[in-house]
Amino acid sequence: MTTKQRAYLKSLAMTMDPIFQIGKSSMTPGLTQAIAEALDARELIKISVLQNCADDPRELAALVAERTRSEVVQVIGKKIVLYKEGKDKKKQIEWPSSPRHSKKDPSGSRSSGSGKA
Image (cartoon, rainbow, N blue to C red; front, side):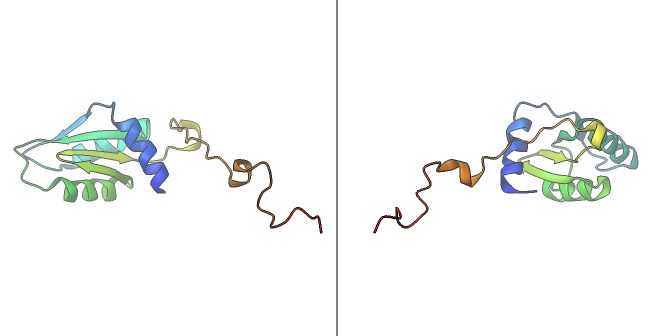
């Protein structure tokens, strides 16, 4: 994932509410399965780590990402954002198109001279 893609996903996640909470029992197989299913359906999810969870949110994020084959977008405080690219027909997130470098300078000022001698 490039830094621009990560920044775009962060901007999408800002308005999202957490759909899962990790509490005292930490990561259970059922919670892992539910998160994997949510990632397949939504691609981008936010998880909240509750105060009564003794585990470090960054370690939990890495663990969940490994178990669900997803990527950690960010961990801020006790909030985790995960992304997993959907299958071709289930893709929901459209990446912004990046402008090509050649279109930035239509005057063609890259050349060192005007051709006049």
